Length: 288
Ligand SMILES: [Zn+2]
Image (spheres, rainbow, N blue to C red):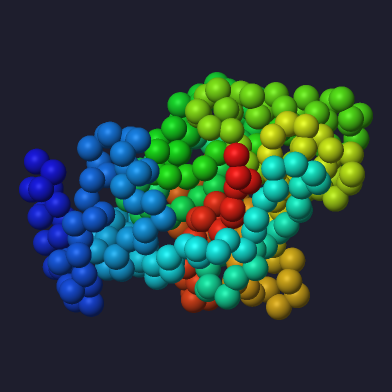
């Protein structure tokens, strides 16, 4: 059934956009996704960009045209994390690759359509999850993780960290770390403080060090509903920028859905000539 489905898919692909035809012959690597065997899905495509055009039909389903595939991840990672000591704080990654990174925070909106969308498009994301916001349905994020996306730390209940004493800061980071590690089978490597607050304070750095994450990750752009808010005055993406988005639904997006927001984000990235890479592919975890 898998081969048959693939054949039908490749054919639809060729029919659809004239320009996409040559890629149909290379469609095979993108196939083994919809079988429901989640863990192998992640292993099958370790950062390998999907062939351009092979998935044109999948993108067309979401009223999008395929993003240019990201280049292969750099062998020499621009960010190298240490096992001990102060953790670095960064909001972009040093690279000349024309790539940006998408991070999605909190975890409030759990729209099944978004899982379907990412399964179709295979755009890499990193998820910074807040325990009290995701604990009513940890399972929602598992198929997203199975696509190869990493789960990262975003506190227990989303406080303004700089207003907390050291011991409370520590429990915010450590308790989220423990819950996410238990639920998702792997310990978050990265931490993001809510609102970016306190990121550069020695106290928060110490709290993070005590709990396991080895970097504090901020952002350069913040996705709103249809466009991004830029920190740069020229309002342009730069190579290596980290983009913040949120799991949000119609209530927060003035009627727009999570998938509409995400589609608009991809369109804004595409129109500036960028592709989306996986943040963790540019980061070297500490040797264990
Ligand atoms: Zn947040």
